[in-house]
Length: 189
Image 1: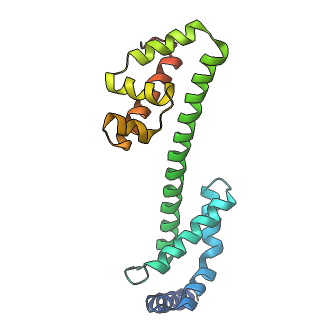
Image 2: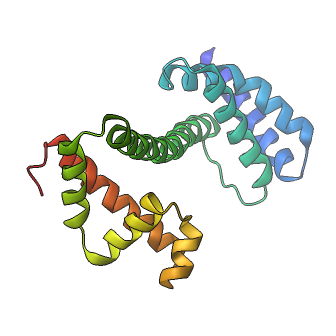
Image 3: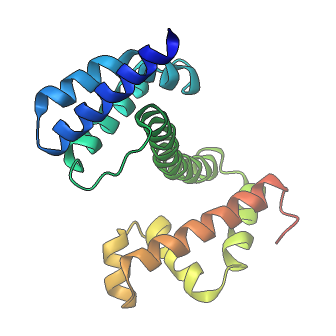
């Protein structure tokens, strides 16, 4: 009994995939109706209950399928869809982590600068100066131009005749070094 149902479902899925490749939006809608709830539940579970992310990820998978319908070679639709949701979740969280890392870097920089300015604590100020002084010359110059003189990444890149991405990379390395120095209480300087 179950074998017949599976064969019918598989044949139906094959038909839907063939119609999808021909550009049938009705076939896409039917696939969406067949799998949306299960894919959403899967994404919801692995996103830690994040409804918005779960919805976005499932929608992105179906958008990808539609946009790439002519080049897809799917042998097992169910497996393909669940794998696609998993990879889309990984991709989403990877992007979020990169954005979160940039945000945290900015917050740390502001904290350090505000702490030095607000507290006027000589020990912190001295540690910061030592940490900056211990940087390689070009990196030190980039920190001074961006954080002390307040120049933008583009302005520093133009002034030093280097790529903006190089300025960002060097600034990120410098900020990581400064964080490390402050975490260890100046032991690295």
